[in-house]
Length: 407
Image 1 (tube, rainbow, N blue to C red):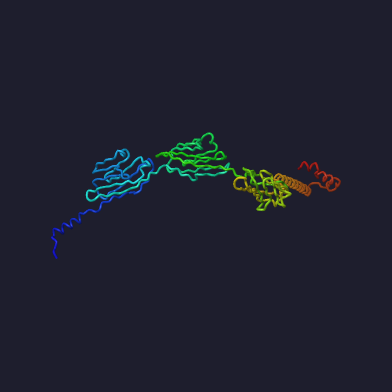
Image 2: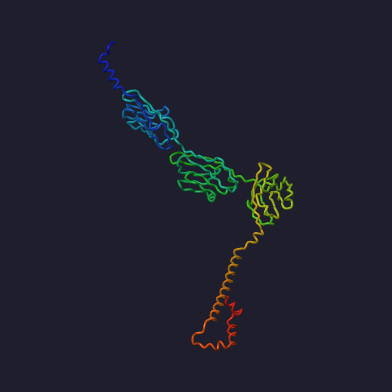
């Protein structure tokens, strides 16, 4: 076998030692998210020093450099900057049109070129709505919930083109017509509208301007509906034997309806014809055209839920439930009022005081009568004069006038 010359082996070994590794470009973030008006930083790092390179956006050149000399295209001169020695790109005052792919290509001192691609997504001001269509009943409160994607510096709400209110920073100003009913909730700018009427139905538009970008708007639709059945009172309290009126008022013409008590039929009507169940014929009455129920001579057993169902001439049927609570008149009559209780207590205390006073007086007199005469005192006159004793006893017993004065 022929042997290679020593010089050939040395050259091969030298080439193996000095042959460079492949040239690469590392990107800190392959996808960059930034808002309108902000600055995007395309950070890259080559694996070894390069001689030149360039950046382009969707195939269109932004700028290039050779050594330390940088050249920026006219379109980007005011916004773009290439940072050497790494070759990173800085892009200022972003616009929505800046979204796309940015590619950097570099050529090292030794070896072939390499490239890397980064994607930029420019976030615009967007207004997200929780519900684009809001249904509420008359008299209720509507919340127009919105959430902007960026910080908003100013905005306003209008209804069918008419101003409701506006805000600048944290300062809110409402139109005179809406001062008592509307509220703008910052920082999101949601709208709260109270005490709704049917005339509030329509389109509500919010316009916002972000701190770094252009304006955005969103429109929400409000439908204020009047329930088919309106009730004056949902809870009725009556005493045994009285008459209960279940007052209802339909918002549209009704062709038929019925009343039920705890699921049991009381009455029904078709147009102007009323039909009462046998159990309620003597006590119940349907008042047309509204369909209110009159229930006479109520008892404890009448307590419960009363449901009315109505079918309008146009549209779907509706129902409403009212609660009746019948108070036991006998029990309520036996109850003693707080004033009566206080009077009884005072009278009892007075009687007790009178009894104690009389007892104390009697004990005192008895005690005085039983005392022994003092030593040396002549008692013969008292012992012998029996005619004087009764007189003294009678004088010490209080008469009626005296008792009244004591009390």
